Length: 468
Image 1 (tube, one colour):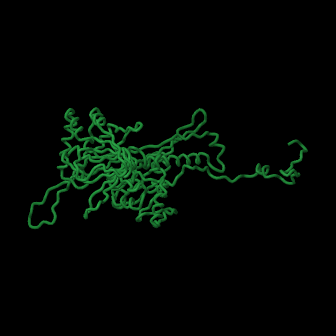
Image 2 (cartoon, helix red, strand yellow):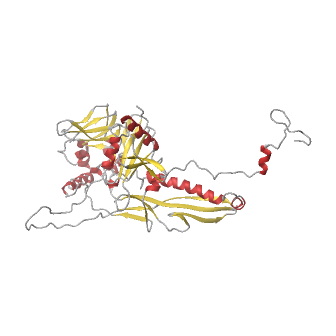
Image 3 (cartoon, helix red, strand yellow):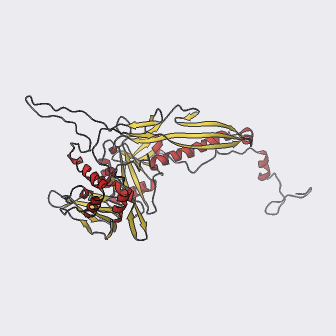
């Protein structure tokens, strides 16, 4: 504006006082600390009991078990054709630890693809078990016979499950339940006859199957652990059995995982722009928040120690109707003693709420750290947005018993590391480079361990998009 030029308002009238835009040049603004949308409640980190680990490794010792492991099978889909990954056949109990890739590839090629419509009977009670069914896609229900002859549900299986695996070890095995398709299903079938033909040519497979056939002869409890010989209810002076408790020869060890980054701050910013907030402190605060978000994500999803990947197969349940109903959560809670908490994606909690509304039920709530948390059967349901939601709008609900004393799930950390700002989290000065940039190494060490299999359970394939 030139000298003598008159300032006018928006209405064209001469301005009679100092404007706000000019006045702000002499005023001190009130500002907030830097905000960050990524920050979540992180209930898993807050509720998980943390155990201090020395030497960066935690070993879980268990009783010796003769139970053959099992798991989830992965498939490859090309167009409308589905194939099983050869190595995934090792998830079948009869092929666990079998390592001949050539033989596994031959077995994978012999799998036959079949399609079943909703309501179709895949296998009937009492029929001979001469085929192994690998469920590539869909949901099936196992039906047994009740005490008065009526049908009763024995559970639901979905993508990645297998049925009839006993056929590979017992030629006289029969179906102890009926398998009915709840939805349209894509199934790969591996006939026992084909496995026997391959075993005739592959000596390694024949020996492997013969060794496993001896396992059921071992005296075990219902968990597959070596039985402790006991006498009870006797009278007189019978011989008392001798026993001992054997341990696993190769217990699992959990090594602490790591998440870290290098924080860089220009020395000029650190020196001059520290009022009213310290720039270095704010940069470090937001970096630590992002690091903790990644830490919780890893605790849920990491392939080595993540909760979703370390849940045993027999502790994985499928919702009977797809949506998360009160009945499904009751079944999930019944699989373990002393469940301390449930973790679910917020959209899964919303879907569960809709099912409660349909039944006219109102869940109780408890106050935790100033927050009202919904509960089911007295067990709090904490939101966790790190639990993935698939493109098909399905997710999982996690149930946990926690703590070392309860043989539950625990978090692992190592407190007392150099330059520690929080337990197992450090910020280490790395120097100043030739561009006058200060560098800090920010590191977090963590992991999680499941002490016994039934401490962790997962309700899988929960549908969150159904509103009817």
